[in-house]
Length: 494
Ligand code: PNW
Image (cartoon, rainbow, N blue to C red; front, side, top):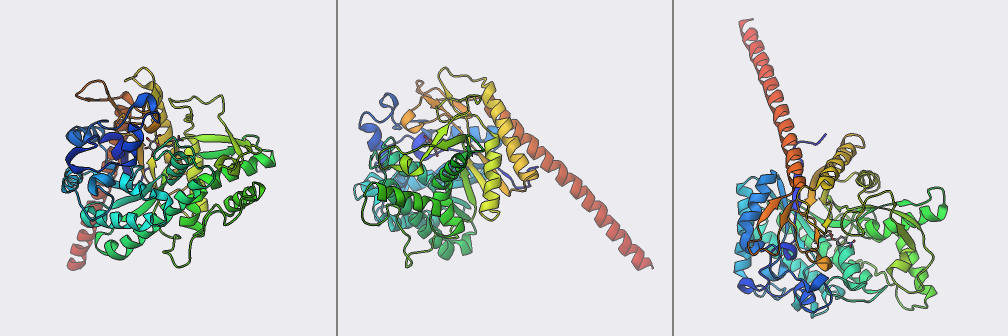
C-alpha cells in the first residue's frame, strides 16, 4: 500500500529534548522563562537538561538507526542560532551543532525534516511583543532565510511553524503554554494571523531565492482532530462539528489552500459574538492586507499533526468573550474509547483516515505528510507497552487504507516522538517516546519500548517489500532488455 519513497519518520522538538539551555552562547527562549517562573509546569519541571540531546546526539542517532527510520523530524532552536532572535549576532556553536546533526543523518541515509519554530520564541523577541506584534513576520522571515542559507543545501523538507493553533490558544488565550498570556478572545487570533503572515513571507523567500537551487518543499504544520456530530441526525450538532473543524483545521488550511482568507463560518461566528458582547472596532479576526505577500498557495504539501477524534454537540455560549464561546461546540469523548495518558487523547485511529479523506476532498488533493501522531503513557513505566503496539499497528493500517482505498496522496508518517521528552505543561509526567528515558538517572540512557520495536518491524517489512518489488522489476527489466537485445540480434540476422 505504501508508495516507494514513503517517509517513515519520528519527530522531536528542540526545547523538548535538547537541554543545554545556556550552553555555548544560546539565548533564552520563552520556554526557559516560562519554566523558570514557578507555577506553569507540572512539579516545576523544566527543559534545562531534558534528554540532553545537545550533548547526547550520538545516542539519538543510534535510536534513529535502530528504528530504521528513513526520515527524522527535528526543530531548530531559534535562540540557539540567533541568541537575540536577529541575525545581528550568529551563534556559531549552534550552527555547528545542527550541521553535525544534519550531516550525521545524511551519512546514515536518513533525510531530515526541519521545523523552524516549535514553540520556543527567543525571549528578546517576546520582550518586543512576540507573536502579537506585526513586526514579528519579517523577523521570522530573516531567521528563516538564515536557516535556508545555512542548512538548505542539505535539508529538503521544511516546516516553518509547528501548530499555530496550539501556540495561539494555549500560549495566548489559556496561558498554559509560554508566554503564558491570558487574553481571551483577542490575542489568539492576532497570533495565528501573524504566524500565517510570517510563514507566507518565509515561503515566498524560499520560493524566490532558494528553491531554484535547493529544490526543497516548505509547509506549515497544522494540528487537527477529526470532529463528528455527537447525534448525527441533529442539525445543531452537525453545525457544531463543522464549526469545530473550521476553528481548528480551517483556521490555517483555508488561507493556505482555499481562499487566502479565513473560513467564512469562522469570521461570521466571531463577528456575531463580538456584536453580542458589544465589542466595537475592527473584527477580532484580522484581515490579510492586499499589499502583503499572498497567503494562498504558500504550502508545498499538507503537514498534519493528528492525535484524536472528538464527538461534538452544540454548546450554547460560555457567557464570556473567548475562543470557546466563538466556537460554540462542546466536545465529548465517547466512553467506549480508551484514553491513553493525557486526558485529551482518546485512542481513535480511524479518525485519521476520515480526516485524510476530508483533506483530499477539501484542499484539492494535496501531498500529505503526517508530521505527528502518537500515543502517550502516564504513570508507572511500561516498557512492554502492549496497548501502544496495537495503536501503531492500527493507525498505520488506517493510513494504508487512506492511500489504497481512498486515494489520498500520503507521502510520509512521523511518529511522535522518538524519545520520552519534556511534554510542555505536563513536564516529564507524560511519555510519548518510542524510546524510554529515565530522567532521574544522570546518564539519561535510551531504552527501546516494545512499541519502538513494533514500529521498526513495520518499517523493515515495508523496506523488504520495496526491495522485493525492485528485484522483481529489475529482473523483469533484465528479461525485457534481453528480449529487446534478442530481437535486435534477430533483426540484424534478418
Ligand atoms: C503537539 N493539547 O502539541 C506538539 O507539536 C508536540 O510538541 C507535543 O509534544 C505533542 O503534540 C503531544 O502533546 C500539543 O493540549 C500540545 O491539545 C498540547 C495539545 C495538543 C498538541
